[in-house]
Amino acid sequence: MSSGKGGNNRKNRQRFSGRREDTQKQAKRHGENIFSEGKFEKSRVSLQERPQWTAPVLPANPITTPDCPWCGKQITDITTAICDKDTGRPVHFDCVLARITEMEKLETNDSVCYIGGGRFGVIHYNNPPDTRNFTIKKIYEWEPKDKENDNEWRRPISEYFSIT
Image (tube, rainbow, N blue to C red; front, top):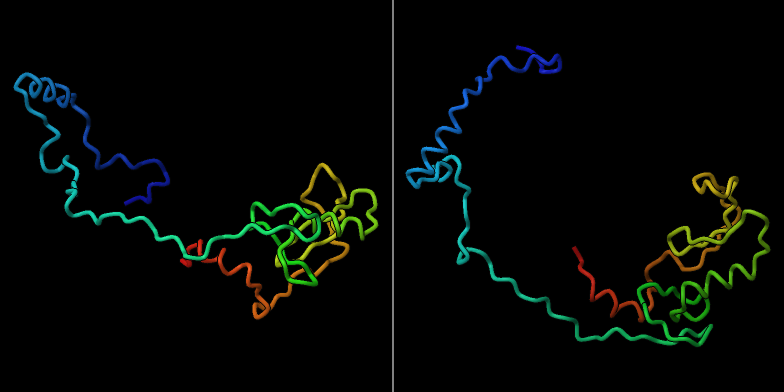
C-alpha cells in the first residue's frame, strides 16, 4: 500500500459510468428525489430541540464618560483610556502620547509608541519605510504591573466584557 505521496491513489476508485445522469432523469420523470434516500439526507434538528436564545443582561453599573483632566475634553471611548500616573484617573491615550513626546527630545527616525503592559517607549527605526526593524531606546513604565492598585473606574467597564 502506498502513502499517497507518489500520486498512485487511484487503485481503489471506481470509474464513473455516467449512470448518475440517467438516474436523475428517470427520477424527474417519476417525481422522485434520489437525494432523499438515507445516505444523502442531512440530519436536521427540529426547532423544538434547540435551546432558546436569551439576550444577555446588562450590568447595573453604567459606563461613565468622564472628562480628561489633561485636555478637559470628554473621554468618549473609555476602553481606550489609560491611567494618569499621579492620580490614577482616566486620561486620553493620545494625551499621554503627546505628553511623552513633549518630554522627550526625539531624533530623526524616532517616535513614541505604546509597547504593551502599560509601557511606552521611544522607538528608533533604522529604515522608516520598513517598520519591522527597530530598536527601543527608552522605556516609560506608565501603569503599575501589580493589579492591587486597579482603579475603580475600570470595574464597571470589565462587567460589560465576557470572562470566558
